[in-house]
Image 1 (cartoon, rainbow, N blue to C red):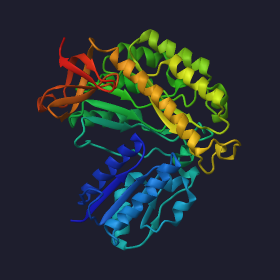
Image 2: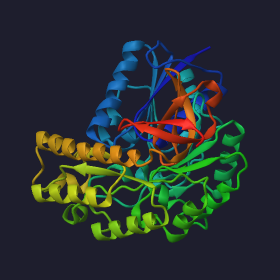
Image 3: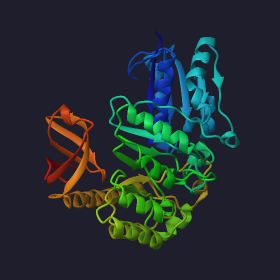
Image 4: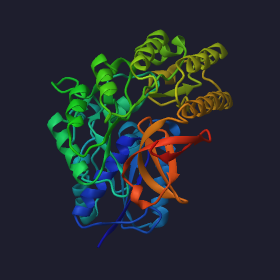
Length: 428
C-alpha cells in the first residue's frame, strides 16, 4: 500500500480542502502517514497570504525531499496559483486553485505515469465552485464546511483575490446535504468558512442568511459558527437571527485591518471607522456579551505614529474581545507593493507588539466578565484531568472531568479566569 503525507499551511479553507484530499486518497487505497515520516507521496497545501507563508510553503517542499529524495511531490494551492516562481519548482505535480476536486486522481495518474504535470490554470479560468467532499473530520469535534471561494474586493495589500479567483459559492442544497452528513458522522458544531464568507450566494438566489436559517433546523446540530464576516455583510436579518437562535455562536470575527481612516482608504477597505463603530454598537445592543474579534495589519506603507495612536484608540473604543495582529507583508502584484514610505521591519514588529499587548489585556478583561456567569461549552479534549472546550463566544473553558464530556455541549458556570482560560463547574 502506497503511503502519503500532507502538510497544510494557512487558513481554515485550506484545512477543509486538505481533509478532502485525505479522504480522496484513502478512497483510492493510499495510506496516510505523518509528514515527518518517510512516504511515497508528499502533498503540500500552500498559502501565500504573506511572504512568510510563501517561504514556509517552499520549506515544506524541501522537507519532503529530505524525508524521501525519491518521493512524488505534489504542490497545490495559493502559492502555486499566485507566484510565478512556483512554476519553476522541481516537483512532480503542480495544482493551483482549480482541479482540486480531482486532486487524488491527478496524483494517482501522474504517480503511475512517472511524468511531471502542471495543472495550473489562469485567473479567468477560476469561475466554478468545486464542491469538495468531507464526510468526517477525524479526531475533531468541530467540523468545517467550505461554502464559498474567491474574492472580488481587491484590498490593496492582498494577493488572495489573484490566488483564489472570483467569488463563487456552493449551492445551498449541497451545503445543507454536507452539513447533515457531518452531523450524522458525529459532529455537533460546524464552522462555515470561505475566502469571503459573508458574500456566500452572491450572484445567485442563495444567501448566508438563508443558509443559516436552514441549518438551524438540522436535528443534532448544536452549534453553527461563522468563521469570519466583513462589517458591511452583517445585515439586520443576520443579526436578528444570531440573536434569536441559541444554535448560532455568539462570536463574530469582523476584520477591521486598521483603526485609522487614512490607512483604510489606502488599503481599499469599503468602510470608515465611524461606520464600523456604529455597526458594533448595533450588534451589542442586541447581544451585549457577544465576542467581537478582528484582524489588524500594522506597518502598512505610509502608516504614521498618529495612525498608530488612532488605531490603538479605535481598538479600545470598539473593545474587541481579541485581535489577530499581522505586520504588513509586501506582495508582488498588489497595489500596496508600489506605495511609498514603507515602514522598516523593526518598527513594524514594535507596533505589532504594542497592539498585541492591548489585545491580550482586552481579552483578559472580556473573559473575566464571565466569572459567575453561565456558558454553554462544547468539550473537545482532555488534558491533565480537565475537559477543555470552547463556549459559544469562543472562550476556552476547562473543568475537571473525563472522556464522558468529550463532544458534549454542557452548561457550566465560570468560577475563575487566569486571563487566557476560564475554569468552570458544571451547572449553576
